[in-house]
Length: 435
Length: 168
Image (cartoon, rainbow over the protein chains, first blue to last red):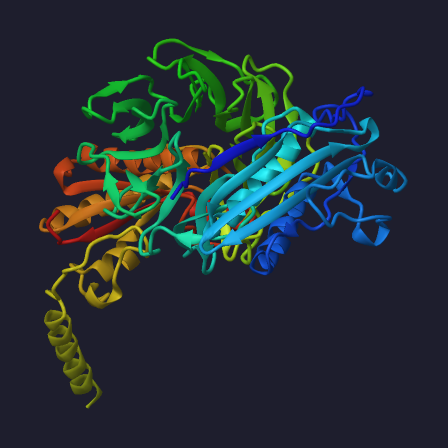
């Protein structure tokens, strides 16, 4: 399913002295969205025009979705771009206060697609980074648009992008109390959604493997919660066998993809275990009469953050990924659960319940600098974008007509919005960046 | 005349009760629907039927917020279940544990399991063989009451005993 992309780099020969680099610093303060222009990519042949339009629109949609960019519309243009290789008239773009200019060209021959783009720092009279060319089949047009947007985003923010990514989640239909739940996978923006299970049994909390090719999830297919692995491309699934009379749930892959950490319940008690996927050997990582669950690895695989009610209420703890002693990191007033380690390694996202409200929050890995990003009747289950800058989560509304939906918010707390899905949705998991 | 009619209906009732008793039970608890299938429950008037168990013995125990210990009224219900299970030795029991919606997904699965296990341990402590009892947790996935306040939440924090004479 992940196609390889050929990337060709080419260099614009004109160079000038640079003024202050074009940069949005996205973790600080209030941001005025950066005004940019993206004249429609040029279709190099008649057959290329339709995709040229679609690709341009999708790139702009990605940039708009960040809340960091503001498009200066075509109606404001003084001159346009009618040839990808013509020199840029910087003064025409400065005059309408465009700070970044994106140009592109699209070439379709048969089933093959080739897209070139250049990004210009207008007030420096210079290109920002190298022009690139992406090649793929025609069907890969969405991924190419996302890759272009990722390049624009990363050159201007200094962060890696996140648009060429997917989300696996639970699609929900039906009334509260008897919901039909199906695993579904989609592009991060909601496009190309497809179901992976048929809804005849409850499924919960799917999580991607480090390559994005497999998904772990909890399923009631056998009648009690058990862990399954499903291959995203084929939808073929296998159960991770456990002892009869036990319940397994809350699984996550280790960063090297070789093992699974999960919760095992027996005799009413829930602890955290790890299973090696190659030889099925198991190790018990916690051993306490309290509830230990929701484990998540650090990106280097050395530590696990999890939730436990050993102190009397749900709190967050960090231990070595081999198990052993655990250090509590949550310290605020309330209950903490569903911890997830950021792909950057520096923060942990979590669900907090306090005074009747639910919040998605982040904290440093030692528990300091706790910040709440959302508040509602029921927010839970954060997942990080591949660049660790955006969090997606479940928001459920109250009452008999309550429904769940996916929402996303920046780590700064800005740009909270709903993710468009066909059905209701819950338990999202964000894939790594596509290759 | 009236007495005759009364006796007639009483005898008819006994026949009808007797006929429905051994309805075949080829179903199993699945994780999607409420687990009992009313077609096979039998008549409420039959003390050996699933319907009788649900209506007269009491099939559920409720819990306080975050708690899994059984209070006095819960113990009364479970004692009645013990009694019924002892009289109906060919029945097995699955105890489903549930939580209200004011909690996160995994924790509620674990909490539901604690509750189911609490009920199970009580039954075992009163002499029911542990091999007759299975437990499962539904976390917050299957509330019976759908409103979002304590009136509904207290009904959802429950351990429900589902009896069947299915072999498992």
